[in-house]
Length: 119
Image (tube, rainbow, N blue to C red):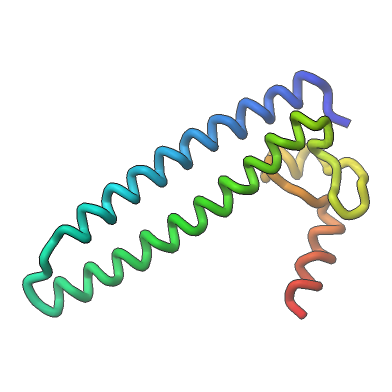
């Protein structure tokens, strides 16, 4: 079980990452807007813009997914359920939370969940 200090430390880490992601999203969105205002001069420019736009779109998608997981984790801290596996309802190991502070499953249940999603 997590101590109140550990819970506060995880909350601070999650909040800091949330701020970083929001900043990243704003930066990438500004870049995409700037790219949309450019006129490609030839097919090479058009191809480069298309590739860069796709990469930035994937970055935004990944960052939004992580932001969503962070919001869920922060909600769990508020509710007092942070660090509890959503499947087995056992505590998630501190070492796992240190690596992935928005983890929703313990290692065993994560493996089960991933196998089920592959089917």
